[in-house]
Amino acid sequence: MTTNIDPIENADGTVSFFFTFKGLEQQLKLPNGPVLARDVGPITFTLTFDASGDVVSFTISGEKGPHPLTDGGGYCNILVPALS
Image (tube, one colour):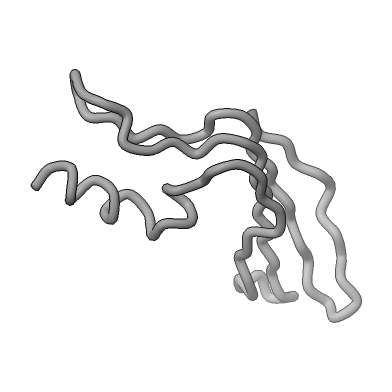
């Protein structure tokens, strides 16, 4: 489940958007095999743009629960060793 709040206009002229994902958002599983990793629990991302629409930052602004696919460098760090 994804929830969003209204964008926030920051004092420096940038605008921030917040996206919160709850529950089991990502799971990496081999076909007919084990689950290698899953991201579970709420995680919030903040995406900030400047006045011209360019991305200023993209950060994790809140996190609870294990998120190895997000924290651990992504899919390749988990998938490649499992296939080797």
